Image (cartoon, rainbow over all chains, first blue to last red; front, side, top):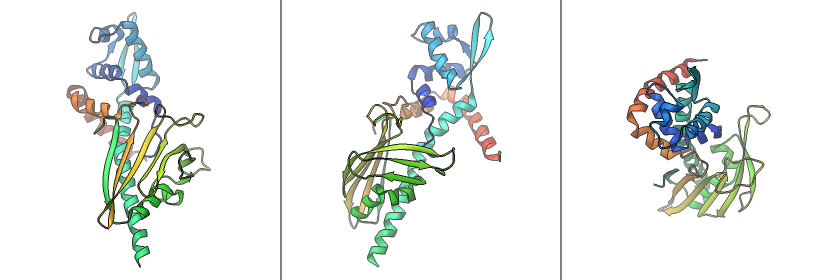
Length: 111
Length: 154
């Protein structure tokens, strides 16, 4: 990967409460009310976090009675996780290139 | 390992002076990292690195600010911040190359930190990725399918 790390996506998953919410939603979705029953924060605070997740496409919303039901967008979550793991591997590849370049220059200087 | 950082060590069969040039000079940087690099490799020096063809609208241009330039021992810079702002610990990632003489070669220590400050908490996410097995087990098989689909899409 290159530098196209999606800042907003990472900010969204960078918050421990929002990650906990994603975990809860992964078991079959939920509403702000059902989530707040499992979290030490108010329903209003949950709704705010859900808004952040929704803006970056990590959750889908469907009307559910008087509430809204949220489900995880697994493709977008996959994208976030793929970016995370690729940060480390990208640097591994770069360091290998640094090694090859430096060793080639060193050999040329010795010749 | 500090949470929120990537750390690596690699042995290179070249003197620290040579390795320093490779990690710090734009003409070498563009060989191992992006497609283009414009950078003044002195403390406070700023520049940009370009991923992709710079004439294309898809090109990704990222600002860089050099923090330390101490040949042939240490070179560090900040990147991934908003171009309208100056680089600070709160808005960027810090990349550090530390060069330690090792025999006839060099031990290169690399680190990238600042995820936590940027709110990314990459390492924490990774930890949860392992810990919250129930949730992630549900999700992982789908990730494999998703990646396979991406790969097979022309």
